[in-house]
Image 1 (cartoon, rainbow, N blue to C red):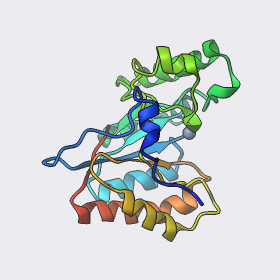
Image 2: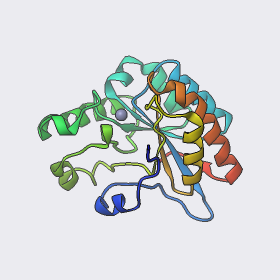
Image 3: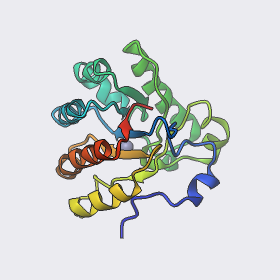
Image 4: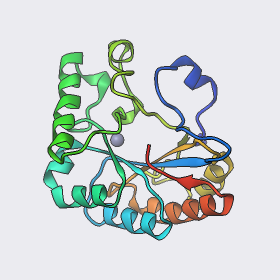
Length: 209
Ligand SMILES: [Zn+2]
């Protein structure tokens, strides 16, 4: 069984990471985040859907993809969404030394800066990080995890099951993870409109981190 909602003990183990976004009763915000883009057509679909619901979101982009698709990256920025760091090549922290990992982050940061914007923060690919990263870098980089993993990349999941589970977990401050990638698109295109609609119905406003 796929667990969509992060169990509450996990954030307590890693308190330096952000597992929720800012929210209050007066401002019941939620946070849609999209990892691994930008990706032509798929990112465009996401931008169109967000626009339909006047929703703002956060895109944790791969540096290489931003460099390859600068116009698409500009479209994300011009639509008022935030851009965050997801390393230069989707680096796996468990398979490389710390120096190389930090270079991956730094290279991506430079691509973001080249668009004249500031990164909203960092999301480690695969949600993986090492001890040294957690101790020395997690806070400075403003590291965002999530509270709801949609699992859109898992092609064996049923879209209706995802929608039902994620709707249950939707509450103010929730950070949802999606992927604007080719692999995730079959599920993404079904679950994203449904979850945006649910937010509108619940009075939850999707904004950028
Ligand atoms: Zn990723």
